[in-house]
Image: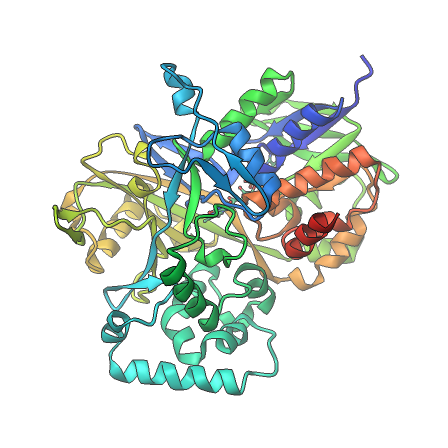
Length: 529
Ligand SMILES: Cc1cc2nc3c(=O)[nH]c(=O)nc-3n(C[C@H](O)[C@H](O)[C@H](O)COP(=O)(O)OP(=O)(O)OC[C@H]3O[C@@H](n4cnc5c(N)ncnc54)[C@H](O)[C@@H]3O)c2cc1C
């Protein structure tokens, strides 16, 4: 009767992790309010006529053993003849439990697959390895003159690095040299963010591609020759950008989050879809209830709670308080910037580019391809067949995801679905990947606020944090919830640690904010205990 309640805003990875952790580790009853009809947030899977779209392509790997264990407990690894008998991640080795599926087709479907990662860069209408390998093939494709300039500019950067490393451009130049940066990083990065690399903070590079350099790439290639690749799924010693294999739910990332939601409901937790939280009611420095609007009927309802978790965008949550935050804090939250995202699903009979094998022409094996060509707006191309064959209804077809990074205010965001599909078909033909006559079907998905940007007012984010942390029963967690460029694992860890804090009666939230930026530190600290 007197059970404490937690109100969780959002049923993405962070919100659902919080709900599950509360149910399994505390006596607190979670109510998850989700404005859409789906589970998984950005990590959901869209099912279009049996062809599944993963918005962005979600690799399941983590350097956190806690997260790896959690995922595998939800969806075990499919054990097959050629799969490993044990999973080794950062500090642990676990024998793989044989799948209990037997003849039960539902259980057989609730599994993860172990997938090889392959992604390449498409530039000058050619493929280049990612990470760049300085092989004869790469040098031939680049040509002598360009290769010479790359070498000279790299040596110059290695000997005389730029003293100031405040922008992303300076970050790249110090690690790769100006020429290599211009060839392989500039166009794609600027497509993602929509602003020049000179306007993006070096902090983005430090967080996302920390440790990646020409040197790290060379060492990785050498280690691969002698050790035959890294079989450790956690791949702790491998830079994130170089991870070679990953786990993947049979039917895409959304399957993981639907499974977590199923278990939450089974344990008596409540998940309400179609409820958008738009007001936080406070009493001094505690939140006491939220007000949500039913997206179908417009009806409003109040939900009282003892704890509150928000995964909604910081910009929106700061405008939801009944007592207006100070002017300077609102100035910062209003000035936060996001990038939005369009995926065009194209079902095609075949591609113009193939892998030539002894058995003839085969579908290229890339999971995704970075489109560095500056004459198209297309940023990245997903080949969903290579994420999981179960993402595609007819194995004789190729199911593609063409990804466009944009702002909601851009012309491209406002294009009708028909015109968007036309643009996608025309661009992919232009760069020689498909013949547009081969397209059988198509769909368009628009996703808002997929990337929290590290420009705009972001450098003053500490003002928001100082203000919000004083609400002792309010936890901002997840990606947009904390305005952090988090992957699923880090979004989940923030939720797990918020529950740890509640259990320990700890009020200080500093550790939550350090997830991702100081992750290595956390892991080491945990290790030395
Ligand atoms: C292109 C791309 C590629 C990615 N690749 C990977 C990858 O390879 N591996 C990986 O691990 N991660 C990847 N990610 C990151 C991953 O998608 C996110 O880290 C993760 O989904 C964040 O989870 P979250 O719960 O914090 O937020 P979200 O997924 O954004 O979920 C938040 C939820 O809250 C709901 N919500 C928002 N406001 C309200 C409100 N007011 N009321 C009620 N509900 C609300 C939303 O509808 C949403 O469902 C990728 C992301 C992108 C964009």
